[in-house]
Image (cartoon, rainbow, N blue to C red):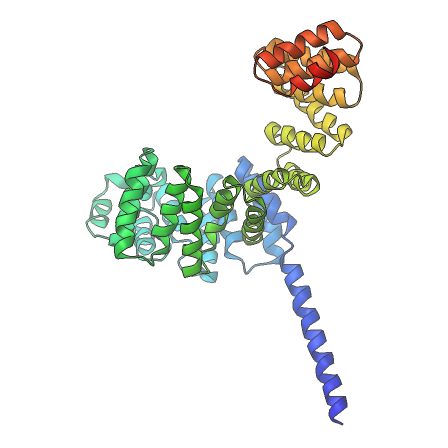
Length: 408
């Protein structure tokens, strides 16, 4: 009897584990309509964004961010009543999270009393934005001439630590990072467990190029508050700059799981993969990004470069051809396509592209090296050696190998 009960318990445990695993896997799959809507919002295609978020909401009406993003799109379309309804729905799901957006929508639609009321609620909330940010928000331009606006700012809404953070941010905007660092270090002596002060000092250290100190501050902030997850992208960048690419990828993974529509993170993770010469996942990230931003020439060029490094010259040529069609006067695109033609032993095409690249940018030593190799391989040893010597004279030391092997 006991053995049968144990088997039943094991079966239940297995089923529960399976359900939990399936649920986790499912939750990690972002809604395609949400991604499409987010991309459209960032590109200024607001009607398409509304359509995307509406489709996502039809499948999940319990995510406040869907309503906030659709509301932002409607606000841009000047559909103020619909935008306000979405922001109210977001507040219903997560109280207070959309007060700032309600303040904005009422301000631009001329409903000053409601705008002030929601701005006051925002200033009393955990979501409170810095004073400087609010006072410079163009949505409140019309409010600033009113007595209610003046009365609102007669009250001191910010803590001592928030004021220090604002002052440090001001120094950072002026690129006065040493002053910002000193200010934050002094403040942390009095409040060593303040995660926001730690995170900001981490950013200051990053800007100063002190990546070890930056990582120390970011990690200390996360140790103090595991829910301070918005710091993952910043720590990932610090890991990347410190040459700790695998750690960078781990943090980018965490950040992307939290916000699958943070599209720039895919570009940054791809760069980290590329630094490890992990070309397949780097290309995968680039393809994901280009699915939503197909006209981003810089990203297309980078994807082509990763394909080139992976030995996939056909796809590399596809991206370089596409970019040159859109921008036929870009020396980098000709250079990239030329070196790819060189790999495919189509030397005439390689020489043509590399020569065109040098017409546009004659000071690129690497391109002179590639051109020298292409001429050499095509049988023009004299001119090939001349180009290789020129590359060497301009500081391209990789040309020395070819010169020793072919020209001496």
